[in-house]
Image (cartoon, rainbow, N blue to C red; front, side, top):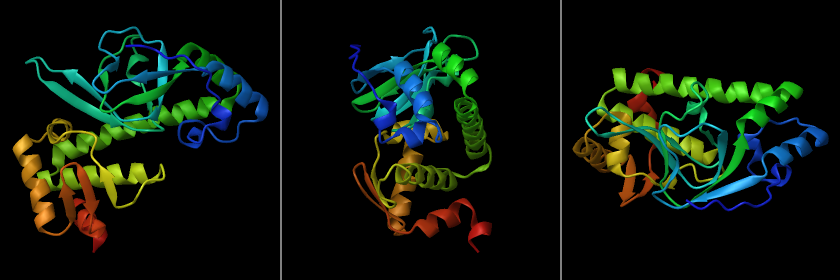
Amino acid sequence: MDAQTIKVACSSCNLRELCLPMGLNPDEMDKLDRVISTRKRIKRGQSLFSVGDKFTSLYAVRSGFFKTCVTTADGRDQVTGFQMTGEIIGMDGIVSDHHSCDAIALEDAEVCIMPFDQVEELSREFTTLQHHVHKILSREIVREHGVMLLLGSMRAEERLAAFLLNLVQRLHARGFSQSEFVLRMTREEIGSYLGMKLETVSRTFSKFAEDGIIEVKQRHVQIKNVDALRQIVNPQACI
């Protein structure tokens, strides 16, 4: 995995509102620019980090898509999350100083490297950054709780509807369409994440298409009726 080292300026990055705190003064922004000074390009199918690797940095996804996964006792890959542009990955390594999952690029991607010891040092110096790091950690906890709810109490249709709604919401926050997107992950990977068999994922996609809720052409998905998806996930709130 080749690392391409080039100068990065967070202050001029159009993604900084997504992965960095607002309200930093020019001096604080300059210090952060000096810390987050390199990028790394990852080819599709390659790992950004693997289970057991020493934890040194957090990574802000500048472009591309990633999946995080672990290998189960019987040798299966269990997908634990999907990460996209503007999101931070690598937090799994904080607790033990070693990564507990693999992070694999689903397409050619680029990340900004955030050396954790320097980020920690800076966060003690200005509280805006410290608060932002805490928000990122809290968001990860909330996401984990959401996945547990998906796997523990929802039917297959509810799981896939919730997944599609979450995906399009995150993409829209990054300036993409509210109704059309390309799935960077396979149906098998979606099934692994949602605790569904591949056949169930494919069958549920087909049902949504037959019901006129979505239109699917290979990996291109168009949501035709977002209210119907919301009704599937939470019928009480949609009445």
